[in-house]
Image 1 (cartoon, rainbow, N blue to C red):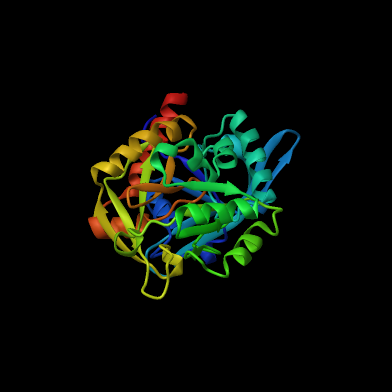
Image 2: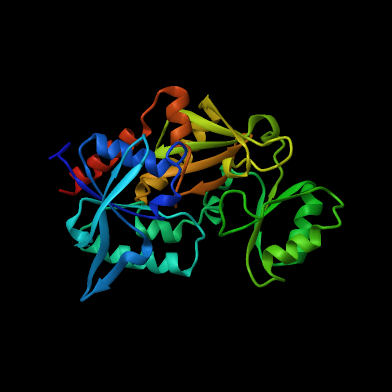
Length: 321
């Protein structure tokens, strides 16, 4: 029945890495707990397959805004097809172990489990490369492992941003000015001398004052406010982990157009919780693995985005029954 207590399994990093005042996962856990839903925690290494069934060694979890922020019960093994929802909140890197996890969770889906976000989408919607499916929404972008192609892209567009495809939090993001003598070293480093793909994008100067805005989609529909992450004076990266300041703002018409272009495709793919990174009206990344920004928006605008996600999960479960 809609609204009945549910059992959630959170497949995520260890709880002692969670920052209660900042982490979106903690906000989701608090929202679920307020609604009476049970929380079971595990890390990817606790998930396993036996005789065709997907299991996890989990511990019941209670969370609190006051210290101590979380408490565990003893570990038990549960069949993941027997719980209501599996929330995957594992931070990147997106590596082979994460891909294996998506294969295993897809088996749980086939047995009847709801996985948020859907396992196939977690594997198939790369947060940077997936922008290629929506070129009308994006600034000029190149994905390549050819160093000469990256150099030609820089000559064509002037100031550019270069980054790897698998990392998060602003790690290894470079801004290159025209004529930068470090450019070729950057291309070589990011591609490991042409052995791996990397991304180059035209630099969008709006980031300096307008920030890198995180727009959140819940089942394809936007939260009405974005979190603009404005770089510090000492850095070019619009990432909170890199020292950027989070400033909330209402969505504008361009934001809403971007959401209309991308949101339905995300919903159809089973991506219930997605973060679009928007600079100067252009999408630079589509975050499906572990989108953030909820705690800041909740505080600044008296929202409860976790509750909205819970409602989307309940609606999805109701459609499946």
